[in-house]
Image (cartoon, rainbow, N blue to C red; front, top):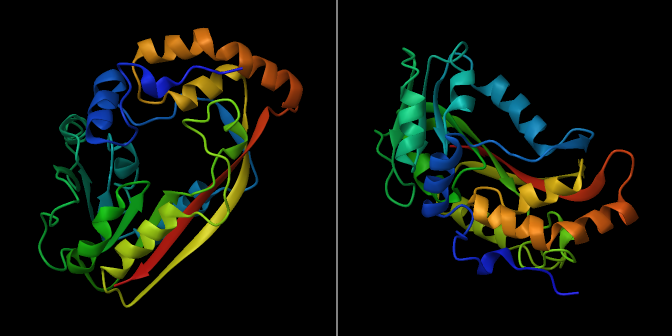
Length: 261
C-alpha cells in the first residue's frame, strides 16, 4: 500500500529551513513539540539539561538557536547574564518582551560571523540549534571556556520508515551524515578539546495521532489534514499490531558535544 507523501503537498516546507522556522513562529509563537511521548530511562535532553545547569551559574552565557527564548529565560535566576541568538525575528521579539535585566535576545544567522566581541562570553550552549555556529564560538567564548551542544542523531525513528518513508529513513549503520557535518564544524573551530558522545534511548509515542504530529511538526493545518485523511488509518493499524501498554516504541538518539575553548 502506497501512503501519502507529505513532502509533495504545496504547503510543505523543509524542516529547520529559515522559512520553516518563520512559519512555526507565526503558527504557534513557540518552539514546542506537539506530540505526546515518554522515554525509557534518561535521554540525551535530560543529560544535556543537567550539564547546562552545572555550567551556567554566575556566568556570561550565550544560547545558540534559542527559539522563543523560554529555555534561555529559565536560567535567568542563576546566570550573571545570558544572550539568546536565533535567526527568526518573531522569536527574538517574544524573548525580548519579557524585559529581564540580565537576559537579552539577538536576531542573527550563524552562517556569518557572530555579532559579538572576542571573549564576550564565559560559556555557551547549543540545544538543537545550528551546527554552523561552532567555528566562531572559539572566538566569542573566552579561552578556557566551555561549550555544550545537543543535536539529533543520525539513526532516529527508523521504525517509522515503513509508514512514511520520505520522512523517516531505515537505519543504515554506515551512514552518519549528521555526525560527519558536526565533526567538520568542530574541526573549523580549532578548539583546545572537543568530543561527541552518542546517547540512545527508547521513546514511546502515546497514540497514532502523535505519529502525524511528529511527522508534520511546523507544517500548516492543510498538511496535517492530508496526513490524517490518507495516512492515519495505516498508522492506527500499525499501533494495533506493534504498540505496547506504554505506546509505540521508537528508537531515538542524540549527539552531546563537549568543548573546551
